[in-house]
Image (cartoon, rainbow, N blue to C red):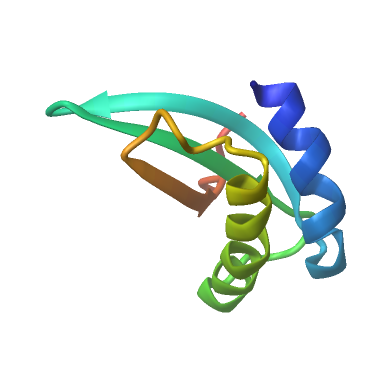
Amino acid sequence: MKDKVKKLIDPVVESLELFVSDVYYSNEEGVKTLNIELDSDNVIDVNRITEATKLINPVMDDNNLCDDVDVLDIHSKEKGDE
């Protein structure tokens, strides 16, 4: 899944100087979430995440990649994460 999402999303968010650093599932209290973690060589502010989300959502929908999840969470990599 990670490779497929990365291959589809990286070209879409490249214009925002972002790239996919990780894709993983989480499940908290029965809510299945697909997490897409974005990274950049520059600071990622909330506006860039918002713009990225607007670009990513249609790609995920068009490729039926969210059919088995309750939530799609698009967020930036935490500073200092390896």
